[in-house]
Amino acid sequence: MKYLDNLEVAEHTSFFIMGAVVADDGPSGVKAPDGGWGWAVLFGCFIITGFSYAFPKAVSVFFKELIREFGIGYSDTAWISSILLAMLYGTGPLCSVCVNRFGCRPVMLVGGLFASMGMVIASFCTSIVQIYLTAGVITGLGLALNFQPSLIMLNRYFDKRRPLANGLSAAGSPVFLCALSPLGQILQHEYGWRGGFLILGGMLLNCCVCGALMRPLEPPKKAEATKEPAEKKVKKKLLDFSVFKDSGFVIYTLAASIMVLGLFVPPVFVVSYAKDLGYQDTKAAFLLTILGFIDIFARPICGMVAGLKWVRPRCVYLFSFAMIFNGFTDLMGSMSVDYGGLVVFCIFFGISYGMVGALQFEVLMAIVGTQKFSSAIGLVLLAEAMAVLIGPPSAGKLLDATGRYMFVFIIAGIEVTTSALVLALGNFFCIKKKSEEPHTKEEAAEREELNKCENKTPEDAKVDSIEVEQFLKDEPEKNGEVVTNPETCV
Image (cartoon, rainbow, N blue to C red; front, side, top):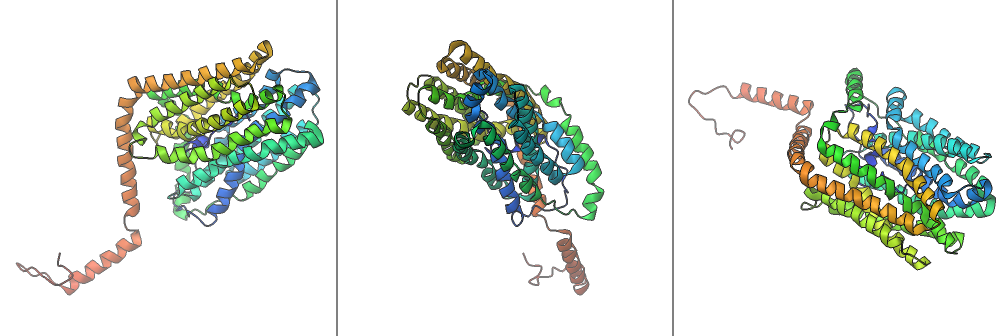
């Protein structure tokens, strides 16, 4: 639950590009179908996104049982979600290499097996360290090997409808969060944490089914000939560290890293918070369902608002506002003393988190441009992975030391608010002026590409040239005369 992220995320067409670290080595000569089998691919991507982002949060409903079983503290159990999130964020380059070498479908099938195997083995573990390695590392790697290739396939199958496809795919995160959290609570009550892990491991085998849906598009012969050079170019971009020369990118990376320290902390601890206040387990888990339900609507609505003509040039400030809103919500949530207060907190946290998820990668693209976005997103995610590995466990340590959730929420709110100030002030002094010109160039380049796409195909051009030749033969040159037949009249 902690990683209520997202990416996702489409939260923003950008969030879903979360896996944009991955090189797209697909056949460039194949036109995106924008439908047909693409809807099956979209369905698979929806499932994968749901598992990838909701699963780490849903697992947190088992934390209380793990604490009793192994005699550990909150900070120890929080490492499970942290490792899952860090694996999803930090393995982008590894996923790139695998996809470029073996293709999307095989990588996703292996990833599905890894994700399932990790949870199944975890159900037999006898120490928390073993759970870190199985449910954390192995399952996290499996989800990462599914998530990023699924985004690549979605982008190959959709072009004109890509924003819609990304938005629908991103909705998988909150939808699955609403379903998996209560399900996890039921499984824990009926079968214990071991039985729950075993059943969830079986459910993760559905990732293999989704991987089987990712049918590769057939490339034309000419595209095959140019495939190798294209791959080489992509590899260079993946290793392109020149984005660090852009002060705007550095400021964004710093702000995002600070934000992630606190962003995922409240969802990790809100269920335990409710339990400590004396509420039933199912009632406590329902808080995540509320949060996820609000998030479902917050993401697309914020995306539509961000696309408005007046708002889009000021997206950085809207993103800063979303972070301040989120941080302020955490600070108010720290004062909750009953279930009603936690419900109000989850409603506003869902709105603010959906806004953050919808805007974070859109803002990054505006700063670095489309050409360097794939490299930039990989580096940002790596930085965020390090922060995410520290955030929730540190909050758990604070909880163990103080015994009060209030301080956990206050620190999280301060961290997110600080990141908003870093980004807003950095944008005002460094990013704004530098980003305007590249943004204009980008738009010009995109318009050029659109114009090229609208040009006639080679066959059309051939037909036109034949007609012109025939016309010239039929109408010999007449010196000094203007032929005014209907075909030549303006």
